[in-house]
Length: 371
Image (cartoon, rainbow, N blue to C red):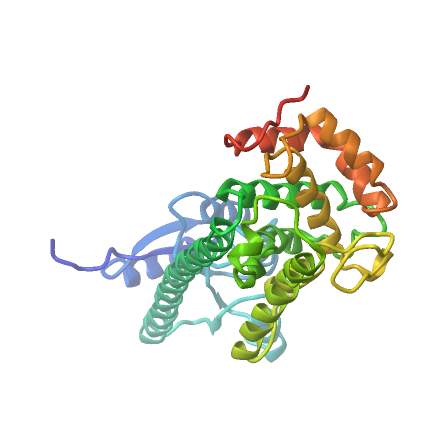
Protein backbone atom coordinates (compact mmCIF):
# COMPACT_ATOMS: atom_id res chain seq x y z
CA UNK A 1 0.00 0.00 0.00
CA UNK A 2 1.28 3.46 -0.89
CA UNK A 3 -0.27 5.22 2.10
CA UNK A 4 -1.46 8.07 -0.14
CA UNK A 5 -4.71 9.58 1.22
CA UNK A 6 -7.81 8.98 -0.86
CA UNK A 7 -8.67 11.94 -3.06
CA UNK A 8 -11.34 14.18 -1.59
CA UNK A 9 -14.54 15.07 -3.41
CA UNK A 10 -15.70 18.58 -4.32
CA UNK A 11 -19.30 19.24 -5.36
CA UNK A 12 -19.62 22.08 -7.89
CA UNK A 13 -23.04 23.76 -7.85
CA UNK A 14 -23.65 26.21 -10.71
CA UNK A 15 -26.33 26.68 -13.37
CA UNK A 16 -23.87 28.02 -15.94
CA UNK A 17 -22.16 25.31 -18.06
CA UNK A 18 -19.04 27.43 -18.72
CA UNK A 19 -18.47 27.89 -14.98
CA UNK A 20 -18.85 24.15 -14.38
CA UNK A 21 -16.37 23.39 -17.17
CA UNK A 22 -13.85 25.90 -15.81
CA UNK A 23 -14.04 24.67 -12.21
CA UNK A 24 -14.01 21.00 -13.20
CA UNK A 25 -10.87 21.50 -15.27
CA UNK A 26 -9.25 23.44 -12.43
CA UNK A 27 -9.94 20.79 -9.77
CA UNK A 28 -9.87 17.43 -11.53
CA UNK A 29 -6.11 16.83 -11.22
CA UNK A 30 -6.29 17.07 -7.42
CA UNK A 31 -9.83 16.13 -6.45
CA UNK A 32 -12.80 14.08 -7.45
CA UNK A 33 -15.64 16.31 -8.64
CA UNK A 34 -19.41 16.07 -8.71
CA UNK A 35 -21.76 18.51 -10.43
CA UNK A 36 -25.20 19.92 -9.69
CA UNK A 37 -26.87 22.57 -11.82
CA UNK A 38 -29.40 23.70 -9.21
CA UNK A 39 -29.88 23.87 -5.44
CA UNK A 40 -32.35 20.99 -5.25
CA UNK A 41 -29.93 18.61 -6.96
CA UNK A 42 -27.11 19.86 -4.73
CA UNK A 43 -29.11 18.88 -1.62
CA UNK A 44 -29.72 15.39 -3.02
CA UNK A 45 -26.04 14.81 -3.84
CA UNK A 46 -24.88 16.22 -0.51
CA UNK A 47 -27.16 13.85 1.41
CA UNK A 48 -26.19 10.77 -0.62
CA UNK A 49 -23.30 8.48 0.29
CA UNK A 50 -20.44 9.02 -0.16
CA UNK A 51 -20.90 12.68 0.69
CA UNK A 52 -18.79 15.43 -0.86
CA UNK A 53 -15.98 16.80 1.32
CA UNK A 54 -16.62 20.39 0.21
CA UNK A 55 -19.17 22.31 -1.85
CA UNK A 56 -18.48 25.21 -4.23
CA UNK A 57 -21.84 26.98 -4.32
CA UNK A 58 -23.10 29.57 -6.78
CA UNK A 59 -25.63 32.03 -5.37
CA UNK A 60 -27.85 33.11 -8.25
CA UNK A 61 -29.71 30.00 -9.43
CA UNK A 62 -33.39 29.47 -10.32
CA UNK A 63 -35.91 27.82 -7.96
CA UNK A 64 -33.53 27.43 -5.01
CA UNK A 65 -30.66 29.91 -4.78
CA UNK A 66 -27.32 29.19 -3.13
CA UNK A 67 -28.20 30.97 0.10
CA UNK A 68 -31.34 28.91 0.69
CA UNK A 69 -29.63 25.69 -0.37
CA UNK A 70 -26.89 26.37 2.18
CA UNK A 71 -29.43 27.13 4.91
CA UNK A 72 -31.04 23.76 4.31
CA UNK A 73 -27.67 22.00 4.28
CA UNK A 74 -26.82 23.50 7.66
CA UNK A 75 -30.24 22.68 9.12
CA UNK A 76 -29.81 19.00 8.28
CA UNK A 77 -27.51 17.24 10.81
CA UNK A 78 -26.47 14.79 8.09
CA UNK A 79 -25.04 17.55 5.86
CA UNK A 80 -24.33 20.36 8.33
CA UNK A 81 -20.64 19.43 8.57
CA UNK A 82 -19.89 19.83 4.86
CA UNK A 83 -17.99 23.12 4.33
CA UNK A 84 -19.51 25.47 1.72
CA UNK A 85 -17.59 28.09 -0.26
CA UNK A 86 -19.66 30.60 -2.21
CA UNK A 87 -18.45 31.44 -5.72
CA UNK A 88 -20.59 34.32 -6.99
CA UNK A 89 -20.70 37.53 -8.96
CA UNK A 90 -22.46 39.21 -6.01
CA UNK A 91 -19.64 41.26 -4.60
CA UNK A 92 -21.32 43.62 -2.15
CA UNK A 93 -20.17 43.48 1.48
CA UNK A 94 -23.66 42.69 2.70
CA UNK A 95 -23.80 39.72 0.30
CA UNK A 96 -20.61 38.29 1.77
CA UNK A 97 -21.85 38.95 5.32
CA UNK A 98 -25.07 37.08 4.54
CA UNK A 99 -23.21 34.13 3.05
CA UNK A 100 -20.93 33.77 6.03
CA UNK A 101 -23.77 34.26 8.52
CA UNK A 102 -25.74 31.29 7.18
CA UNK A 103 -22.78 28.95 7.55
CA UNK A 104 -20.41 29.28 4.59
CA UNK A 105 -16.71 28.99 5.42
CA UNK A 106 -15.55 31.30 2.62
CA UNK A 107 -16.81 33.71 -0.03
CA UNK A 108 -15.07 34.16 -3.40
CA UNK A 109 -16.29 36.66 -5.99
CA UNK A 110 -16.30 36.12 -9.74
CA UNK A 111 -14.46 36.38 -12.04
CA UNK A 112 -12.43 33.85 -10.11
CA UNK A 113 -8.66 33.63 -9.79
CA UNK A 114 -7.70 29.94 -10.26
CA UNK A 115 -4.77 30.07 -7.81
CA UNK A 116 -6.99 31.65 -5.14
CA UNK A 117 -9.75 29.09 -5.65
CA UNK A 118 -7.26 26.21 -5.42
CA UNK A 119 -5.65 27.70 -2.32
CA UNK A 120 -8.98 28.26 -0.56
CA UNK A 121 -10.27 24.79 -1.46
CA UNK A 122 -7.05 23.17 -0.25
CA UNK A 123 -7.13 25.18 3.01
CA UNK A 124 -10.69 24.24 3.90
CA UNK A 125 -10.29 20.60 2.92
CA UNK A 126 -7.16 20.43 5.09
CA UNK A 127 -9.09 21.99 7.97
CA UNK A 128 -11.89 19.48 7.52
CA UNK A 129 -9.47 16.57 7.43
CA UNK A 130 -7.77 17.86 10.59
CA UNK A 131 -11.15 18.34 12.27
CA UNK A 132 -12.19 14.80 11.36
CA UNK A 133 -8.88 13.48 12.69
CA UNK A 134 -9.44 15.29 15.99
CA UNK A 135 -12.99 13.97 16.21
CA UNK A 136 -11.72 10.43 15.64
CA UNK A 137 -9.04 10.94 18.28
CA UNK A 138 -11.58 12.34 20.73
CA UNK A 139 -13.89 9.38 20.16
CA UNK A 140 -10.96 7.03 20.69
CA UNK A 141 -9.97 8.83 23.89
CA UNK A 142 -13.57 8.83 25.12
CA UNK A 143 -13.70 5.08 24.51
CA UNK A 144 -10.44 4.58 26.40
CA UNK A 145 -11.72 6.72 29.29
CA UNK A 146 -14.98 4.77 29.32
CA UNK A 147 -13.11 1.47 29.35
CA UNK A 148 -10.76 2.64 32.10
CA UNK A 149 -13.61 4.01 34.18
CA UNK A 150 -15.49 0.74 33.76
CA UNK A 151 -12.44 -1.23 34.84
CA UNK A 152 -11.95 1.01 37.88
CA UNK A 153 -15.62 0.60 38.75
CA UNK A 154 -15.31 -3.17 38.53
CA UNK A 155 -12.19 -3.06 40.73
CA UNK A 156 -14.04 -0.87 43.23
CA UNK A 157 -17.00 -3.25 43.31
CA UNK A 158 -14.70 -6.24 43.79
CA UNK A 159 -12.84 -4.46 46.60
CA UNK A 160 -16.09 -3.56 48.35
CA UNK A 161 -17.34 -7.13 48.15
CA UNK A 162 -14.00 -8.44 49.41
CA UNK A 163 -14.09 -6.07 52.41
CA UNK A 164 -17.70 -6.95 53.17
CA UNK A 165 -17.00 -10.67 52.80
CA UNK A 166 -14.14 -10.35 55.27
CA UNK A 167 -16.59 -9.10 57.87
CA UNK A 168 -19.18 -11.73 56.98
CA UNK A 169 -16.71 -14.63 57.26
CA UNK A 170 -16.25 -13.80 60.93
CA UNK A 171 -19.98 -14.07 61.48
CA UNK A 172 -22.41 -16.91 61.00
CA UNK A 173 -23.59 -15.38 57.73
CA UNK A 174 -22.48 -16.09 54.18
CA UNK A 175 -21.20 -14.13 51.22
CA UNK A 176 -24.53 -14.61 49.50
CA UNK A 177 -26.11 -12.60 52.31
CA UNK A 178 -24.21 -9.62 50.92
CA UNK A 179 -25.50 -10.14 47.40
CA UNK A 180 -29.05 -10.76 48.54
CA UNK A 181 -29.25 -7.68 50.73
CA UNK A 182 -27.72 -5.33 48.20
CA UNK A 183 -30.21 -6.51 45.58
CA UNK A 184 -33.09 -6.21 48.05
CA UNK A 185 -32.06 -2.61 48.74
CA UNK A 186 -31.90 -1.74 45.03
CA UNK A 187 -35.27 -3.37 44.33
CA UNK A 188 -36.88 -1.58 47.27
CA UNK A 189 -35.40 1.77 46.19
CA UNK A 190 -36.76 1.36 42.67
CA UNK A 191 -40.20 0.46 44.04
CA UNK A 192 -40.16 3.76 45.97
CA UNK A 193 -38.66 5.87 43.19
CA UNK A 194 -41.96 7.50 42.24
CA UNK A 195 -43.13 7.99 45.83
CA UNK A 196 -43.36 11.73 46.65
CA UNK A 197 -41.51 11.25 49.96
CA UNK A 198 -38.52 9.64 48.30
CA UNK A 199 -38.39 10.58 44.61
CA UNK A 200 -35.93 13.47 45.06
CA UNK A 201 -33.33 11.20 46.68
CA UNK A 202 -33.93 7.96 44.81
CA UNK A 203 -32.43 8.94 41.47
CA UNK A 204 -30.93 6.26 39.24
CA UNK A 205 -27.45 7.39 40.25
CA UNK A 206 -28.26 7.17 43.96
CA UNK A 207 -29.90 3.78 43.58
CA UNK A 208 -26.70 2.53 41.98
CA UNK A 209 -24.70 3.99 44.89
CA UNK A 210 -27.05 2.36 47.40
CA UNK A 211 -26.61 -0.97 45.66
CA UNK A 212 -22.83 -0.63 45.84
CA UNK A 213 -22.66 0.63 49.42
CA UNK A 214 -25.14 -1.83 50.99
CA UNK A 215 -22.56 -4.66 51.31
CA UNK A 216 -20.68 -2.58 53.89
CA UNK A 217 -23.59 -2.51 56.34
CA UNK A 218 -21.89 -4.92 58.76
CA UNK A 219 -18.26 -3.98 58.09
CA UNK A 220 -17.99 -2.94 61.74
CA UNK A 221 -18.30 -6.55 62.86
CA UNK A 222 -14.56 -6.92 62.30
CA UNK A 223 -14.18 -5.00 65.57
CA UNK A 224 -16.39 -7.33 67.64
CA UNK A 225 -14.52 -10.04 69.59
CA UNK A 226 -15.01 -13.60 68.39
CA UNK A 227 -16.25 -14.71 71.82
CA UNK A 228 -19.26 -12.46 71.29
CA UNK A 229 -19.67 -12.53 67.53
CA UNK A 230 -19.49 -16.33 67.36
CA UNK A 231 -21.19 -17.15 70.65
CA UNK A 232 -23.65 -20.00 69.97
CA UNK A 233 -26.08 -18.94 72.68
CA UNK A 234 -27.91 -15.80 73.67
CA UNK A 235 -25.77 -12.76 74.50
CA UNK A 236 -25.94 -11.35 78.00
CA UNK A 237 -26.56 -7.63 78.58
CA UNK A 238 -22.88 -6.68 78.62
CA UNK A 239 -22.11 -8.74 75.50
CA UNK A 240 -25.08 -7.22 73.69
CA UNK A 241 -23.81 -3.71 74.35
CA UNK A 242 -20.48 -4.69 72.83
CA UNK A 243 -22.21 -6.30 69.84
CA UNK A 244 -24.17 -3.11 69.19
CA UNK A 245 -20.88 -1.24 68.80
CA UNK A 246 -20.42 -2.80 65.35
CA UNK A 247 -22.50 0.09 64.00
CA UNK A 248 -20.08 2.59 65.53
CA UNK A 249 -17.02 0.68 64.33
CA UNK A 250 -18.42 0.61 60.80
CA UNK A 251 -19.20 4.31 60.78
CA UNK A 252 -15.79 5.22 62.20
CA UNK A 253 -13.96 3.08 59.64
CA UNK A 254 -15.73 4.88 56.79
CA UNK A 255 -15.09 8.27 58.41
CA UNK A 256 -11.38 7.43 58.40
CA UNK A 257 -11.58 6.72 54.67
CA UNK A 258 -13.31 10.08 54.12
CA UNK A 259 -10.61 11.87 56.10
CA UNK A 260 -7.90 10.15 54.09
CA UNK A 261 -9.57 11.24 50.88
CA UNK A 262 -10.05 14.77 52.16
CA UNK A 263 -13.82 14.61 51.82
CA UNK A 264 -16.79 12.38 51.20
CA UNK A 265 -18.82 11.37 48.18
CA UNK A 266 -22.21 9.83 47.57
CA UNK A 267 -20.99 6.26 47.89
CA UNK A 268 -19.16 6.83 51.19
CA UNK A 269 -22.00 8.92 52.61
CA UNK A 270 -24.53 6.15 51.96
CA UNK A 271 -22.13 3.51 53.27
CA UNK A 272 -21.60 5.51 56.47
CA UNK A 273 -25.35 6.01 56.98
CA UNK A 274 -26.12 2.35 56.38
CA UNK A 275 -23.31 1.02 58.57
CA UNK A 276 -24.24 3.30 61.47
CA UNK A 277 -28.04 3.44 61.36
CA UNK A 278 -29.37 0.22 59.84
CA UNK A 279 -30.26 -1.07 63.31
CA UNK A 280 -32.40 1.97 64.15
CA UNK A 281 -36.16 1.43 64.32
CA UNK A 282 -38.98 3.66 63.15
CA UNK A 283 -40.41 3.99 66.68
CA UNK A 284 -37.05 4.98 68.20
CA UNK A 285 -36.35 1.69 69.97
CA UNK A 286 -33.31 0.78 67.90
CA UNK A 287 -29.62 1.55 68.26
CA UNK A 288 -27.04 3.11 68.40
CA UNK A 289 -28.79 6.48 68.89
CA UNK A 290 -32.45 5.59 69.24
CA UNK A 291 -33.37 7.68 66.22
CA UNK A 292 -37.02 7.69 65.17
CA UNK A 293 -39.00 8.37 61.99
CA UNK A 294 -37.41 10.49 59.28
CA UNK A 295 -34.43 11.20 61.53
CA UNK A 296 -33.21 7.78 60.39
CA UNK A 297 -31.50 8.14 56.99
CA UNK A 298 -33.55 6.64 54.17
CA UNK A 299 -30.61 4.46 53.15
CA UNK A 300 -30.65 2.86 56.61
CA UNK A 301 -34.43 2.40 56.54
CA UNK A 302 -34.11 0.51 53.26
CA UNK A 303 -31.28 -1.58 54.66
CA UNK A 304 -33.30 -2.40 57.78
CA UNK A 305 -36.02 -4.06 55.71
CA UNK A 306 -33.48 -5.91 53.55
CA UNK A 307 -31.41 -7.09 56.52
CA UNK A 308 -34.31 -8.26 58.67
CA UNK A 309 -35.98 -10.13 55.80
CA UNK A 310 -32.75 -11.95 55.00
CA UNK A 311 -32.16 -12.76 58.66
CA UNK A 312 -35.63 -14.26 58.91
CA UNK A 313 -35.24 -16.57 55.90
CA UNK A 314 -31.72 -17.61 57.01
CA UNK A 315 -30.78 -20.18 59.62
CA UNK A 316 -28.89 -18.87 62.62
CA UNK A 317 -27.48 -20.60 65.67
CA UNK A 318 -30.35 -19.16 67.68
CA UNK A 319 -33.22 -19.75 65.19
CA UNK A 320 -34.34 -21.81 62.20
CA UNK A 321 -34.80 -20.37 58.70
CA UNK A 322 -38.40 -19.23 58.24
CA UNK A 323 -40.24 -19.75 54.94
CA UNK A 324 -40.84 -16.64 52.86
CA UNK A 325 -44.55 -16.38 53.66
CA UNK A 326 -43.90 -16.55 57.40
CA UNK A 327 -41.08 -14.02 57.12
CA UNK A 328 -43.37 -11.61 55.25
CA UNK A 329 -46.04 -11.99 57.93
CA UNK A 330 -43.50 -11.22 60.63
CA UNK A 331 -42.25 -8.21 58.68
CA UNK A 332 -45.82 -6.92 58.38
CA UNK A 333 -46.10 -6.91 62.16
CA UNK A 334 -43.19 -4.45 62.28
CA UNK A 335 -44.92 -1.84 60.13
CA UNK A 336 -44.81 1.50 61.92
CA UNK A 337 -42.73 0.14 64.80
CA UNK A 338 -39.58 -1.38 63.36
CA UNK A 339 -40.05 -0.19 59.79
CA UNK A 340 -41.01 3.01 57.99
CA UNK A 341 -44.63 2.27 56.96
CA UNK A 342 -44.15 3.44 53.37
CA UNK A 343 -40.94 1.44 52.96
CA UNK A 344 -42.59 -1.66 54.43
CA UNK A 345 -45.59 -1.20 52.12
CA UNK A 346 -43.21 -1.12 49.14
CA UNK A 347 -41.64 -4.34 50.39
CA UNK A 348 -45.06 -5.98 50.64
CA UNK A 349 -45.85 -4.84 47.09
CA UNK A 350 -42.72 -6.48 45.68
CA UNK A 351 -42.30 -9.42 48.07
CA UNK A 352 -42.22 -11.77 45.06
CA UNK A 353 -39.15 -9.92 43.80
CA UNK A 354 -37.47 -10.41 47.18
CA UNK A 355 -38.28 -14.11 46.96
CA UNK A 356 -36.76 -14.27 43.46
CA UNK A 357 -33.58 -12.55 44.66
CA UNK A 358 -33.34 -14.91 47.64
CA UNK A 359 -33.75 -17.89 45.35
CA UNK A 360 -31.18 -16.57 42.86
CA UNK A 361 -28.54 -16.15 45.59
CA UNK A 362 -29.70 -18.93 47.86
CA UNK A 363 -27.42 -21.09 49.94
CA UNK A 364 -27.96 -23.88 52.42
CA UNK A 365 -28.54 -21.36 55.19
CA UNK A 366 -31.66 -19.89 53.54
CA UNK A 367 -35.12 -21.22 52.82
CA UNK A 368 -36.68 -18.69 50.44
CA UNK A 369 -39.58 -21.00 49.58
CA UNK A 370 -42.89 -19.19 49.27
CA UNK A 371 -44.66 -21.58 51.62
